[in-house]
Image (cartoon, rainbow over all chains, first blue to last red; front, side, top):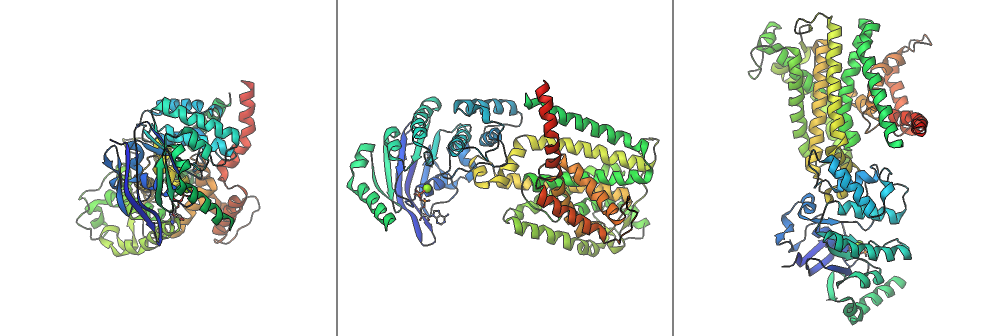
Length: 245
Length: 347
Ligand SMILES: Nc1ncnc2c1ncn2[C@@H]1O[C@H](COP(=O)(O)OP(=O)(O)OP(=O)(O)O)[C@@H](O)[C@H]1O
Ligand SMILES: [Mg+2]
């Protein structure tokens, strides 16, 4: 059984149809890419999976359980954690406290000490070791992205949703990120859904890739297959000509 | 190194504050002592309001109404039906027959007000910040009229006079001294409770919701649970403060807790410092003494009109908001930082 199964999901915002009958499935342990031009509906799909939005139709099954009936705050308890495209950290809380909020679903009233220990270990794992007492404000963007990743990981998810983790990173950092993502899967037994515009990263870490365009799924396959798909090339070229106009 | 220096300093300041509060009755007149009792009472109300507004980001302009509910709960329980009849009132059936010792009414007042606050928090969940401020203001505005209307519970516009409280258990101290200790021991207990709440999982959930509700939800924090919890606890604190206030003045009427008090409470939280528990003590001192000194500045030997109080209060608030957005707590932190750093270097 697929770990995550999105089935015929449609979501409208007023007159805009952000997603039309989209289906996709993730097997346990996979790293799956989700790509598509701007406005294709990638972030919307994340927001549906994490129940920040509700689909107009279709259903989303995680471990066989229908998520459309689950309140948003329970999603992480089921084992789904995410990062945000535009980095959303708690600005008036230290980096360590940000992680402790991430571990909210893991902490019990008297497990504060254990929670802190695990958060500190996670900071060290992601090479953020000495930033625990710092506030997010003023830290470089790449570092903030890693803090957000750390906050998602301390929730001990089985499925990790990454929304453009390479956005705003320099060339070297993107190279590191590819290594980090592969290590994450190994070290934490993760299944990962990755939204990314950085094609090199997608091609180097993903087992399979789904492509969205204008809210519809237009292709799916291995990175090589998708790259050679004429519809995909068309969608990206089309998007570029629109951008240029 | 630096990590321990700040807690040590905090501990020292706290210890000094406790010693000062314990010793104060020896050095001061009973009149002054009464003023410091009010400081303790405001301290409790401001702790609660800071939990709601400072830590959780929900603005309440209705806390005077929660204090009033606590005050009336205490007054009603202290009098009982017998007390109402003695004072010539016609008591409602729900009121217990016999009066209760004042001290025991305080936790009950907190509980009753807490439950009411929690229930108020449920519909408030649907309101954005500004609408919530207005909704709570509406409660504070309408409370006096409601209190007058339900005469069988509140004694109507004439209010309820309470018997003068005495120290219990045959303790041989004067009434002002007893009231002072009663207020400050309660304040100390509630300070510790607030501190325990704020520093752990619950406090982080409150602050996370304040800083970003979507990221908080995605981290597993339920805004409904934690926002209503903050409302309930905050109201309970206000209720306890209101009960102590009514006991302190031995009287309560619909205007004991006016709308202006709601506004001054919020202003004092901001002056002390949002989401700072120690700043609350500054807020409480300001709330009690600023209006008094504004009216008659002690060094200048002037005597202004009664209206000077609110004006100066407003002015101080404006200065704080513009120059020290973190309130007095952040100012004090900024001043003591070199000291902490020096301590840490020595070690
Ligand atoms: N909350 C919302 N209200 C209205 N429209 C929305 C909302 N969220 C998304 N949309 C619309 O849905 C469409 C898909 O947006 P989405 O953010 O999912 O795209 P995306 O694939 O993540 O794009 P990008 O690569 O730029 O991040 C867009 O047209 C967007 O304007
Ligand atoms: Mg997006």
